[in-house]
Image (tube, rainbow, N blue to C red; front, side):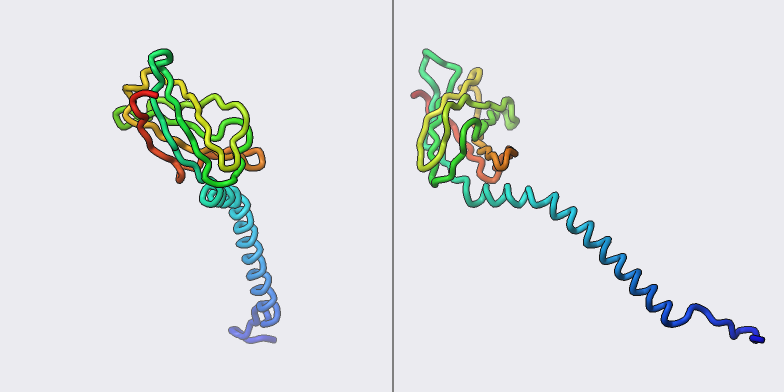
Length: 162
């Protein structure tokens, strides 16, 4: 018969096995969370890389249309590398008045924009002379997902007339 205070607890081997299983479970949980975060962030990394290395546009010129079309500005955009923006909308213009965006303009684009091209685009806006500045923001389509390259945004003010 055992005396008081001599009760044996869990043996050393069982304790070691339980600690190993607990550590293994913790590793699996941390790994699963890490992989989910990486899947979510991988799209952001792709977007950032495309914006940093592929998008290289410049505003070669901009002006207000003449009196025949007073609610338009013309923007000449130059592609400074051979990146293919494909067909459709590859940029938007934000109009800023009194420090706030008053309108987001989406130009009508016919055809594609690729290579070392330079094209002129008309953009419609009411009372363009009242706008203090415009912000050109490139838009890219990767694997049928569109996103904006805010790091490549360009502020400009058109010349008085074309």
